[in-house]
Amino acid sequence: MLMTKALILLSIILIGKTVKSQIGCTFDRPLLGEYYSYENGLEAHTSLKENGDIDRLFYRRESGRGATANIITVLDNHAIGECFNLIWRENPFDHASKHHFELIYRDKEKSCYQCYELYNRTRNVLQIRTSECNEITSIVTNQINFQDLCASINQDADFDTLFLKTYSAEECRATIYGTYHFTYEFREGGIGICDNPISRLVSCPDPGTPFEAVNERFWMTYGYCRDLVSSIDAQPLYQCLGYWINDKGDIFTGIANERVGSERWYDKFRCMLTRQDQPQWFAKSLFAECARLYSPTDGPEKVIISPIIPEVPTPTCFFPDNFTGEWVNTANVNARTIINATHIHEISQVNNRGWLRETYYVCQQISRQQFLVKTVTKGECFSYYICFDFKDRHHNILRYRKSKSFMSNVYDDLSKRDPLYEVCSWISFGNDANWKYQVFVLDPPAPIECPFTGMWTFKQVGQPN
Image (cartoon, rainbow, N blue to C red; front, top):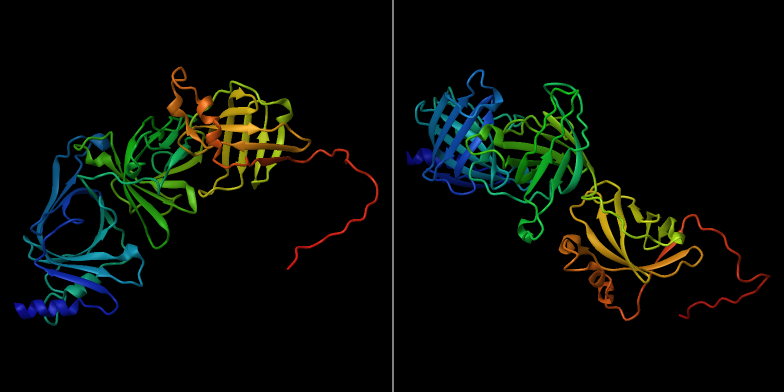
């Protein structure tokens, strides 16, 4: 027996790979726990126990109850086994998404062995691929060879995704952050894109949320489209369960619907797919699986998002008439600035999400040459107060200073706290002894008469060495 175990250990050592082996294994985090998954049309409940036992129950939904069934009544299969051998495989030349645990599973009832590849995606999500359950792998020796057993796993096969039932939310920002309108389309049940103006996706932290928990959930408001039978009227609230990136650059995120109870695992877990170079598209699964998500535009549910402003401020004052026009900001020559009687609209060429960055400054109060404005940016979460200190316009030049920003919700009760006196105070513009003004230049500039005429000679002196 000892000789057999020694041969097993020697057979799994591969050159160029970090291999950590454990015979007669026990489970600890990140593997330990109770999991739910949807595999080949069956609902699976998997228990990886501390003593190394593995308990898997597979259920099929009772015929006729449909997707809204609360109770699953039909047990299809019950697999009871144990972890015989556990190995961590890590190759420095492979993408990090390919590092995994290799587990030899012994079925206690069938007395066969099965190889599991366990990929720890997040602290809430595991993905697995398995071999067939075999008693022998070599007809010549009539023995089991674990290396051959694991080599039989198809590396192009789809993963089964296991969601931890006792999950804890993780940061959403890497997947989605901000305020958006969205359109959606279900691949099955009716062809057509539903574009309802009330459809909203909001992935924003609550004001006052601690920094380490800044953005762990988002909600989607689905607007109903009368002409599409597949459209829905719902408002799920999703918690993020973490994300992972594969070797192709696809970003997968596990999500859990906070408005679905633990008795309805079937409706609770979903998977999303997006990419950094396609941030306005993502695909979402209809079950607790990621295998049917092929690209951000190819999945059971396809969503296209476009940034919107988080609120529509109401103007309560006016800018001077001679401010109206289109301007170039010399501090950001790639931005276009349009000023009318009540709004300053600034359009930057591109931001880090691949969209135009559009910011609106809406006039709220005036004090001398200072203008208190409320600023909102498309795709962002909050509105802010900012103070502009303008100099009088001089021909094609408009000079200004801009204060630091203050979150507007702090001043919701204006009877108790007036933002003008705080946002437009001189300390809000910085501590420079000499006030520095930025410059707007009219675009296109209007010609004016030159202050001098005639022909002149001049002498130019360069800087001495």
